[in-house]
Length: 321
Image (cartoon, rainbow, N blue to C red; front, top):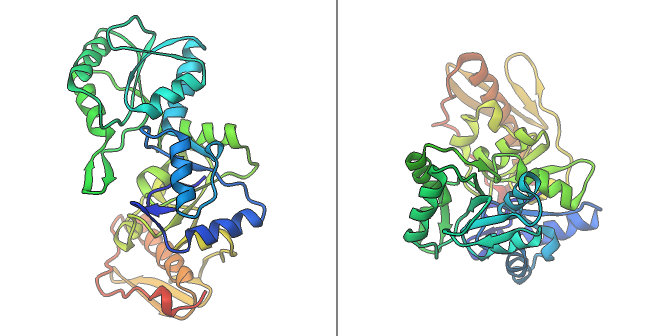
């Protein structure tokens, strides 16, 4: 289950090597699904974008938080339920896909579902806010506070969720990561005996995997860097770690503790006087793995984050796997 932005692409460009890694992953017999908290775009649009980037994808390979939210509404209220849609075309398509009936903010309804949509009008937000405060059940596709855009990081749907929650006094049911409905919906649609969540964000992708009780792979092509990794709490720690999607295709050696530090395939990492140090040689992925486990062991034992100011990160281009 692949997150998109920061994993497969960054903005409008593919992550270097992503298409090649995913072709090899499919050839190895793994089933690939693409999942996204963005509820504005229908799966067909997402699949077309991926295809343009050289990543083979069909609409059935894409699962959105809008689809997960629609599934929750259908399960709770049944097919044919009338739903106020506060969001973009991707949300409307998801509602119709499962037999729900999108209606306007002032119409009789069984529930309201909100999602990111740049064309959403303030007048509709006001009407929905009043109806939720009066008791209309509310579900949200996601609660992401930010969203990447061509002009920079902008407010995401989570900002609207916080605004509505503050006004209404109601906390919505949320479908997207890190809540588990999106991952559950993906497993239901795509299948798989050993689901693996692949993402770049600790607080959505990796935490979502923990909540859904599935394994996770963190890749370092997106927002997570060394500072975030060494400070990760248990619910934000991945099962596996790799610099990119090539990690889907290689063995991941198990870290070994010698009581003073941790060794991973030629690298040895430990924390001395609060400072994280690494010695040895090997592949860049294994460097990151040794650093992570040593830092987490120190954090769990002391409650403090290891000092990384003197730590140099090896260049992936100059270190062989």
